[in-house]
Amino acid sequence: MTEPTTSVTAPRGRPRSERSHQAIISATNELLNERGFVDLTIDEVALRAKVSKTTIYRRWPTKGTLVFEAFSDQFLALQPIPSAGSLHEDLLAALRGFIKVVKGTVMGRTLAGLVAEVQRDPDLAEVWRDRFVVRVRTHHRVMIDRAIERGEVSNDVDAEVVLDLLYGAAYHRLLQSHLPLSDGFAQTVVDTVVAGVLTNHAGTVAKSVGG
Amino acid sequence: MTEPTTSVTAPRGRPRSERSHQAIISATNELLNERGFVDLTIDEVALRAKVSKTTIYRRWPTKGTLVFEAFSDQFLALQPIPSAGSLHEDLLAALRGFIKVVKGTVMGRTLAGLVAEVQRDPDLAEVWRDRFVVRVRTHHRVMIDRAIERGEVSNDVDAEVVLDLLYGAAYHRLLQSHLPLSDGFAQTVVDTVVAGVLTNHAGTVAKSVGG
DNA sequence: ACGGTACGATACGTGTCGTACCGTAAATAA
DNA sequence: TTATTTACGGTACGACACGTATCGTACCGT
Image (cartoon, rainbow over all chains, first blue to last red; front, side):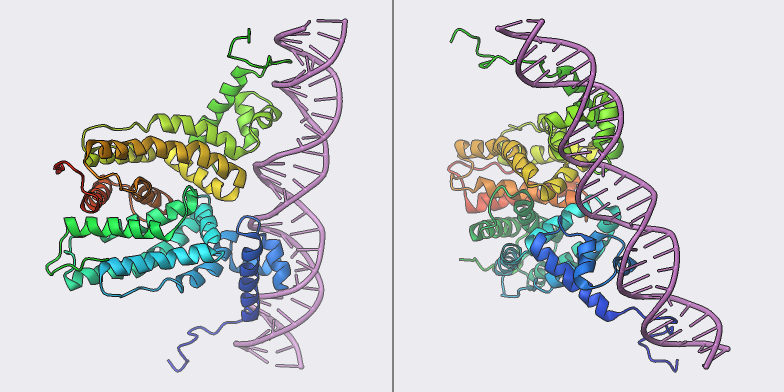
């Protein structure tokens, strides 16, 4: 109890280098930009970070987990929860925010690459679900919860399905590349979903009709 | 002009063995069932099909294209266009059909594996879009076109977005595995999307309200 | 017969992953 | 100070699967 709470058990041997950690993450992000997920190799990350390959494998068991860690915090920081007032405005702003990041940065291809890797690596899939999908969805669900609290929609709305409709459609265009992630797409998606929710789950107060 | 239309240019040398072709496709499907996309190897397909590996590579440049061909016809044949009468009924039947195949057979994991591979192989991505995504969407779009013809919805409905909402949501649950592809999910998805479409794009005749 | 193409069998080169090994460096404990 | 513990760099290595190359043989039309 006299020890500081920062370290309950004193680490014994040589501590892991925080500097190496940062160098690896940085090199990973650099190479992600230059080559993309598929053509990124651990050897090259080690070379770029001036670190032994062994050091990388001591911390991350696979390429997927490394890229995941380099990607996720960065991406999640760019997904704010809008609170403009109406459900329509909030969802549209959120979807536009997603599209902006996905189209405007290399993170779109990295995200696609990670979704792909998740289909190949069950261990990564678990991490992905618990530390990304669940996290970002919990984040986004707040918009719907707030609409319920306001009485804009009733509380029997299936928030999970609403999120699946919005982001499912967006991920679909990202992964299949059959049509562009345009702003018109975002508008139509939100128009349709919100209208559907309001029709089937009208709230207790006058609804605000968006533009 | 005197030649039959079946072969414009007469093939010169030894023709490709149709028997080998079938054996390769069959072996691929067998191994797809046993091991899944990731753990399927070309060497093993060759062994199982009693065919040289060279023969496989003469016809399909990569593992992805081979699996694509073994998968796509089979899958597409199981995606009929419902015509029950109302848009709601048609879309629900179609989505249920998709879920049934994806959950009931190994094709769900194969589909996920192919979507993953498409993110890694640009050549396969092109084939995938042109010979699968476009094809299945054209197929499904008929349901919406017919609703327009019936006057159930107006002709300014964005059919592409409707498909993205429906199948985007389903693919999302397939690929992210955060929630199950339950029948309740299918119902809520269709309820919401159809309500949204009818609200924003009411047709010229009395709409049928689904039970 | 002859040229053209597919075939089987197999060896090979390539790329990448992840591990093993070894001597060294940095920290704590006695 | 010395011993112990753990991380580090450097590198070699094993494993695996991909895709290619080679070569002699089997079928096909002319």
